[in-house]
Image 1 (cartoon, rainbow, N blue to C red):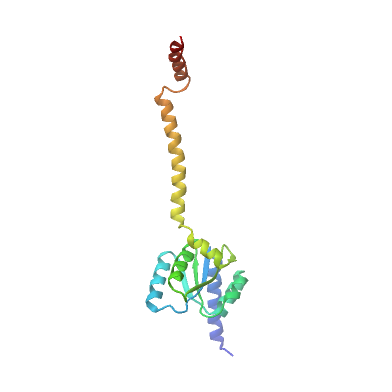
Image 2: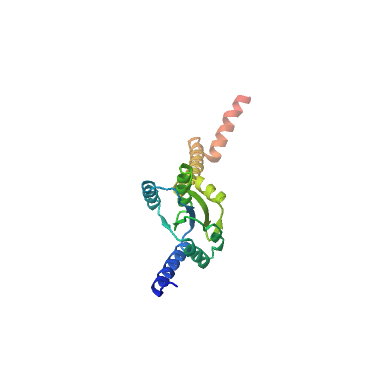
Length: 181
C-alpha cells in the first residue's frame, strides 16, 4: 500500500494534468518509444517554441485525469510509453509538429488526441497536421478580402476617371448620336 505522501503526490499530478486537459484547445497523445535524447530535446524545443506543453505521463494517472476532464475515450489508448502534448491556443501546433516527427521516426507514433473537449482519432490528428498555421490562414483570408476591396476601388476609380454617373452617360450618348446621323 502506497504511503499517504505518495498518494497526495499522485493526486496532485492527476489534478494538474486534468487542469491542462480542460484548459487546452487541443492535445495529442503519443507513444515516444525509440526516441533518443538528442531527438527528444530537439522535439521538446520545437514544441515549446510553438506554445505546446509536452510531458511524459504515467498511463494510470493520465487515465484518471482524462476521466476527470470528460475525455474518457482517451483511456483506450493508454498502453506502453505515453506522452501528452497540449496547446492552450493553437488547434494545429501539436498535431503538426508531432505528425512531422512521426513521419521521420517509425517507432514514434500518434495514439489519439482531442480537440475542443472531444476525443478524436489518428485520422483527425493527421488532417489537423496538414492544415496551415493560424497565422497563415489569417493571412490568406486577409488577402482574399483585400483583393475584393481593391477590385471595388479600381471600379470606382474607373467610373470617376470617365466623368462618372449621369453626366458621363449623357456625354457618351451625345457622341454616339452624330455618328449615327
